[in-house]
Image 1 (cartoon, rainbow, N blue to C red):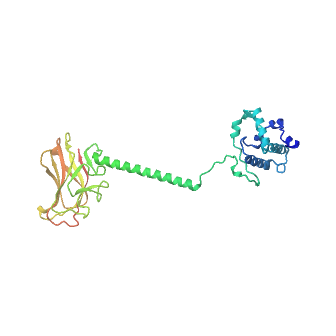
Image 2: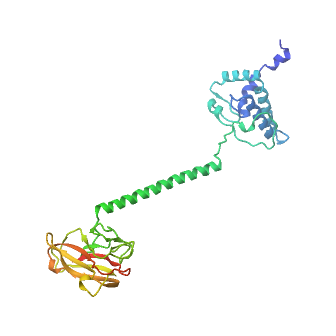
Image 3: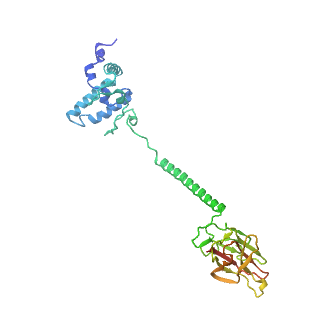
Length: 341
C-alpha cells in the first residue's frame, strides 16, 4: 500500500498541466523516449539556467522547463498527463508561445539544432538527438564518382566521333562524289575529296601522299616501296565518267605534272606518258606525250576542239621501255586534272 504522501505525489494539477504543452516546452515529440526527453532537458538547462542568463525571462523559462521535466520523467505522471492531454485536446494542442497547430505536424517537427556551450556528462548519445542533420558523402567517394562519370562520357564521345568518321568515309568511298565545279569547268579532280574514286587504275598507278600540287594527294605512276617504276610496263589510269562536250566550242584538258623517267637516245626504249581520247566504242587516239625530266610542277594543256559537241572518254597511259630504270627515275605525279569549257 502507498502512503498518503506517495499517493498525493501522483495527484495531477490539471490546470497547471493544461496551461502549456509540456512536450512543447521541452521541444520534443509526444512519442519521444525518456532518453530524448532527458537530453532535451539538459540541453535547455544549459541554455536557460539563471547562473548563465540571470534575467527574469530566463528564470521563468527555466521554471517551466523544470516543471515539464518533473512530469515527463516520471512514467506514472507522464501517463496521466498524456491521457488528460488527449481528452482535453484530441486534435490541436497548445504550443509554447504560439497559437494552436496540428498535433501531428508538431509531433513530427524536428527540434532545432543547438550546440551546448559546454559538455554535460550523460549516458545518452547526444549525436542521435532529433536534429535535422543530413549525412554527407565522403570527399574521396565524390571524387571517384566524378572520375567514373567523366571516363564514361569520354568513351561515349570517342565512340561517337569514330562512328561519324567511319560513316563519312564510307559515304565518300561508295558514292564516288564529284567535286563542285567552277562555272567554266566541266570536270575537276584534285584527289582531295574523292581520292581515286573517279578512276580505274592499273598497277602501279595509285593515289599517293608523297607529292602533290594542290593539297595532300596526287596520282603517281611509281612504287611506294622503291620510289621508282619498273621496265616493260603498259598501264592506264582511266577516267570512269564519260564527258559530254556538247555546246562547248573550245574544250581543253589540263593537269599538273612532275617527276622523271628514263629517256634514252633510242626512241623505241623511251618511257612515255600518253594522254589519250576516244569516243565510246572507238579506239583511243594519243593527243599528248610527256617524257624525260620535269623538275618542277608544270601544266600540260591539250586542245580538245576536235571533239567539241561529242561524248569522250579519257585515259592516261604510261609505257616503259626495256632500258635501265635507276633510283632517280621516279615516274610521273599527276594532280589537278580538269576538263575546261
